[in-house]
Image (cartoon, rainbow, N blue to C red; front, side, top):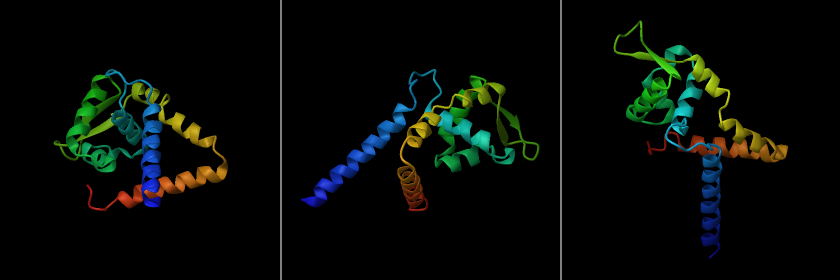
Amino acid sequence: MKQEVDDKRLIASVVLLERFIRDIYPAKHSSAIQPLQWSILRYLARTPTDRCEVRWIARFLGLTRAPVTRAIATLESRNLVEQQISGQDARTKTITLTELGVAALAKDPIVLAAERIKVLPAPDQEQFIRSVRSLTLSFEGDGND
């Protein structure tokens, strides 16, 4: 019986975590920047140019190239990113942020999540960080790719 209660609490906590993440993206309409697109913009802002190709972005995000390519096309149509043919390989495109993309990142909604975590007492913040790192790293290389 105790095991059943623990499982319900664990499921409930994951549902709350999912809601927490969904709530940080207030604009949900199709013309809004979607969570995957935000992830791509963040990646481009923090990664050296030689790693700003679809294959590297997809690998980092744990996705196949197809959804990443579609998301990049949407970002490009909105003038948030641009693609340039690589000087080293004509089959490869390098993706970079435009000025509009950089400006969009200044309003990144994920900062709201960080601000909500920051109001926790310091020990709770550290525990949250350790737990998220541990959970994330436990999924890497577990065969669920």
